[in-house]
Image (tube, rainbow, N blue to C red):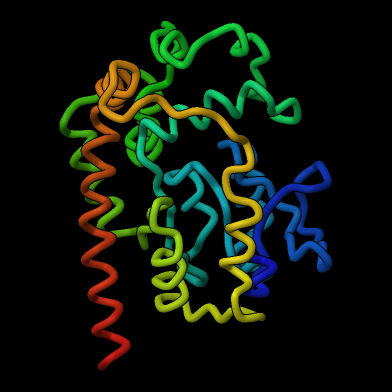
Length: 239
């Protein structure tokens, strides 16, 4: 986004979190990755500072609190199939030595063993959207998550990135700085960590899907919203 659309994004590149701007990177040095960091960012009045165009956080509920009545935000997300997301996180944590969540011991586990671990974190999307980070989930959590993404988010789908960025451009008015930039960037950088996915519909795939049953239902709901959203944006452009 920064390169192709000339947008300033939040990302802490030089700890600690601050309102320092790195123009060459198009980055505002603000950390929004933990609840504690978000409290710090709120203290900076980061939204009111008008220094960043895009605020990036995996914490939907806490992240939204940096905005104010003077500078409100509009959320967007790019959703992945829950089984593919689980596999991606597993293999990523094997190699991500720079991350606090790095787990070299995962190299001794299979994907199936990983999802069967007592501490496996299931239904990540529903948990983040409902702030139910611990404990069990039920249909009530799922319905809340559905309502949140329907009312608060512009939806993107990782399996349909061309259409996702077309819709984001249409909604937010983003303009590529150079024709073909997004397509080139996605082709060069998306999913650099190569790994083998479980067979779709096979025992490992089905096991992960069952453990993430609420995220599965949310994902298929998001696919419907994505289609409806695209039609609505096209009608708006025609009108």
